[in-house]
Image 1 (tube, rainbow, N blue to C red):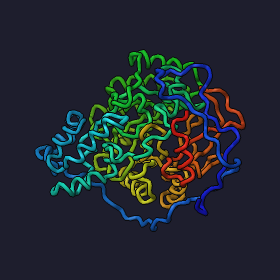
Image 2 (image 1 turned 30 degrees about the horizontal axis):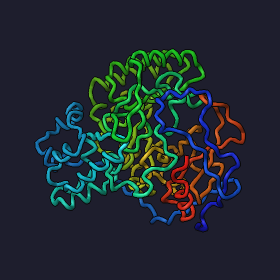
Image 3 (image 1 turned 120 degrees about the horizontal axis):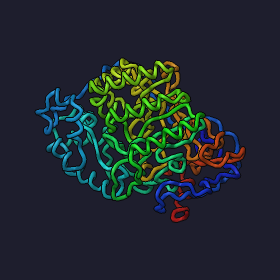
Image 4 (image 1 turned 60 degrees about the vertical axis):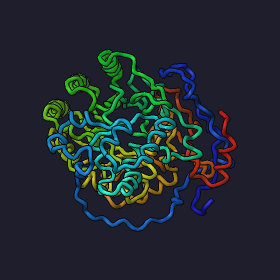
Amino acid sequence: MSPNDDTPRHPADGTSRRPTDGTSRRPADGTGTARPAVAGPGTAQPVTAGSGTAAERPYVYARRALAEPDWRRLPGWRGVTEAQWRDAQWQRAHCVRNPAQLRAVTGDLLQDAFLADLAADAARFATMSMLVTPQLLNVMAPDEAGDPAAFTVAFLANPVRRYLVPVASDRHPVWPSHPRAERDSLHEAEMWAVEGLTHRYPTKVLAELLATCPQYCGHCTRMDLVGTSTPQVVKARLTLRPVDRQELMLDYLKRTPAVRDVVVSGGDLANMPWPRLEAFLLRLLELESVRDIRLATKALVGLPQHWLQPAVVEGVGRVAAVARARGVNLAVHTHANHARSVTPLVAEAAGALLAAGVRDVRNQGVLMRGVNATSHDLLDLCFALHGEAGILPYYFYVCDLIPNAEHWRTPLHQARHLQEAIMGHLPGYATPRIVCDVPYVGKRWVHQAAAYDRERGVSYWTRSHGIGLEPPGPERRFPFYDPIDTLPEPGRRWWASQKGES
């Protein structure tokens, strides 16, 4: 272990137990069984921060104007007008769903080897079906439009491509999944108060109104529920009619005045017809106990055309006016992972929401190797969001423990180093927190682990609340796991020796 490594340590009680009341609401399929935490080689001790990461060159800020790549460089879109490009229905109708449609857009620019790699991933690894909006596909290989070999290399290396159009060669050859990976990695369905309403924190709930998005991200934390099934994952399903599910949610919130903060999500709210969403939000605003409403939509980045539609902007204005009159904070949360995905249309859509009366537009990204896991990439993204698009950098999550995600996930010590490296560059209010969403615990800043065994890559965390679960005990600790390929050799050998054990 390097001199900067934390001393190996392990608490006496590191088990990860499911609630024993049998209240899990997901279909039992044998894929989500909890396993006990590993037994570490040392004694638990307080954790000290240390980077353990090679020094990067100093970051030098230089303002960069946002740019919308020219979609007409791609053979399949050479005749597409600006009016068509700005049309939300055109964008939806021309989403790319499979290798054949990708070939139709890129023509001979994308070589057959890449398309075969993409098909292999869909057959063997993908937990999300392919669905990419033209808006997002357009930011992949934006500067290559001539030589197929150069275009294919640039497309393969593109950071946005890496999480939206994953290929088999991206996946780790030995550890595509961590042995502790689970479909519903955060156990949200075990905390459903009613179908789709996760009550995980004392004063906050998550309302999942639908299970579809305009685009699917390969690292989706709700891959167990969201989207269509893949050969690897038969999706769970929301079973109630939307109107019945919403009535149950509203009734629960009426009966639970301790909840003041409601995250309205899915899936993606951009896939919900605006009149239905507006009706739900206005009823939510009738509840005196609700003081914060956050609307979650990746489509602000992936389909900004939706949020620029006059009927939607006007509807947001009506909801914002009611929220303002009742003293409720209304915000929009989106999901951008790389500066290249932040374009003038994204800035225009964010500006339209703010002008309509939304208090804040904030970004919640995911920390991913090959995408943004350097301080330069994170800072470039934050400056593009905050300085050019009016979007506040808010969180970056350590990628969750879902299946086939090991090539994206970062170890805790690297996340800590990145948090330290970005400090001092942005205004304090616009400096995002890097957090780990620990199963059965919730969001914790990456420096809050109670103990950390660097050799085996196991960190331990505590929680102070027990909403939806058994009450927390003062000595109860919950594990989270680093990707195995980032561990020192003894740790990798230990995990290899555990293969086949549950």
